[in-house]
Structure formats: structure tokens, C-alpha cells
Image (tube, rainbow, N blue to C red; front, side, top):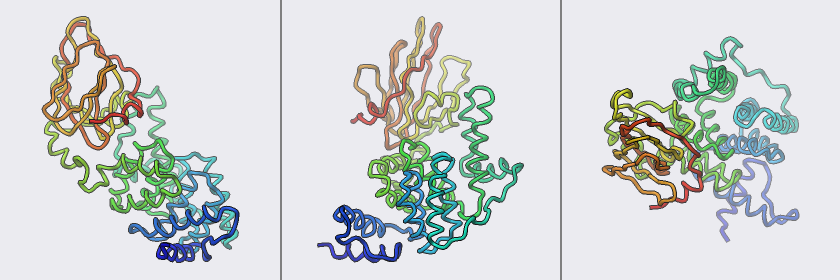
Length: 399
């Protein structure tokens, strides 16, 4: 018997809840022993984060999951380890833009029940510090240094009214209404946002973006990994692996096939700007650096794909001539034609794509990729974008 794990479980359980872990009580004591010894005897002792930050992580995941009985218990644990009611409340509040207001209201109700049981007087003090007129300006001051203005550029394709409103809502709501509030500093808010997005599932693009943001505001790679691992018992192993995989080149300290810094050194023609105009035809972020004038043929452009990014299936049409040539520059990627095996691409490879051939290309899951795309001159040329490359198709590729 692992007596050290049992001892650690008892110590951590006492710190958080002031009691003893399950012995043989209840109808499912065996399951509770597995749960408690894993969470409180193992996971809680790995990594640098303290009890206070770990409990805020737990509250975040339980809010996302809407597991309200457990949320009430961990709000009590938050109070016991010295977190203020304001810190706890702000952790729940900031989930609203990501999980929606109704679910957040459910979590607030459970939190307030725990506050009342713990002798906390309600309502708590107001924590908002911006006026209606200041929301956009105040939000921009937080958003732009960390994330820039990429969202506004990325959604220019939206119909009139929405192209302006959608990015504005993000700035005013997420950053103006919530990130400016008292109770949590920027470092903790960003780390909790990474956990929140990972727990939601299906938001890996945003997980990666916010992992970068979390490190920009002072979190280390170890702290981000620790936060995700601590969240794992509450959100499940698949969502942990999804989050870690999409952030591999950011958090791996150079242990990936090629980290971003090394890739940039080898991407000699430059990444350029995010390709907002064609973003709807890509899964993940791509970047475009025109090397010749778009009005002249042939047109040369360096296209860079972040890890996991690929374009949709598409066809280059032409009455005569046409098609495309890819000159691989840096990193590694994939090229595939319809009903044919995918081809692994590396620097120095050349791909000739005749007009009329349905195909896609992009990066591999664990590294960046760049190629020069050459538009072959032709008559009556056009490009037809088709369906996305599904996760099942993409995840099934192997060398």
C-alpha cells in the first residue's frame, strides 16, 4: 500500500476542507478513495502552484462543467485557504463571456449559497471601475498589448454592422466589463482563462492564443502546464491532452520538432501578416507575405501555417494553364489530393498542382510550416473553396 499517497491525501484534504478523506463511508467509498487519493494525494503535489491558485482553477472548471454541488464545496475550500470572497466571485464572473450568462448565473447561485454557509455577508462590494463611456478604451488598453487588433482584422468578412460589432463586443465585454474589475490581477485572469477554454473543449485555437497571452503577462510555461494538469481530474484526460497538444511548441521549452523561434530563423522570406481575408477557409491561423505584386503573373507569396493549421479542400480552375506550385521553405507539412494518400512535405520539396485537382495543404500538428505559393498563369483562372479537412482526416495522418 502506498502509505505516502494516503498521508498526502489526508494532509491536503485537511488543508482544504478541515476534515478527513473517505474511509468506508457511503455507498461508493471505493470510488471516492480513488478520486481523493489521485486528486489530493498526487495531482495537488505536482508543480509550483499553491493551494490558493489551485482552488481558483478548480472553481473555474467546476463553473464551466456546471457541477454545482462540487462547486459549493470548493468555494468553501477557497475561503479556508485564505482567498477573499471577491477573488472567488471574480473567478466565477469572468467565465460569463466564454460559457454564457445563464450558466454563470447558476454558478453564482451555488457560490452564494457557500458564502452564506461560510458566514460571508452578501452582497459583496462592487468591483467595476469603468464607466459606460470608458468600456472600449479601458478594454483596448488590456487587450491590445497582449493580443493586438487581429480579431478586428480577422472578421472584416462579416456583413455590414457585424464586422464592427463583433470585435467591439469582445473588447468591451471580455476586456472592458470583466478584465478591468478589481479582485484578480491580469496574470491570474489569463491563466484561469486558459484553463476555462481547455475545460470547454473544442476551443483549442483560443487555448493556444490565451496560453501565449498568459505567458506575455508573467506566467511561466511550467505554471500553464501545472494549471492544465491540475484541471485534468475535473475536466478529463482528453481535454488535457488536447490543450497540451495545441500548445506544444509554446510550452515545450524547445523539446518539440522545431519551436517557433527556431522556425522564424529558417523562414527566410518572413511570416508576414495574418491572412484575415481567407481566414474562413482555414482551420487555425495562417500568415501571408506577398513577394511580388498581386497584379503581376506569376504571383509569388510566402504562406506560413501555425501548428495544426490547414486550408480547406479547394480547386484551382482554369480554361487553359493555371494551377499552383508550392516551394517548401521551413518546417514540415502535408499535401493531399482527393482519393490519394497525403504527402509529407519538408524544406526543398516542390509540389506541382495542376488546374482542376481537388487538394489541401497545411502544417503538421506539432510544428510550423512555410511554403512559397506560385500562381501559374492561365486563362479564366479562379479558385473554388470547398469543405474543411475534418479532424478525423487530419488526426489520422502519419509519416
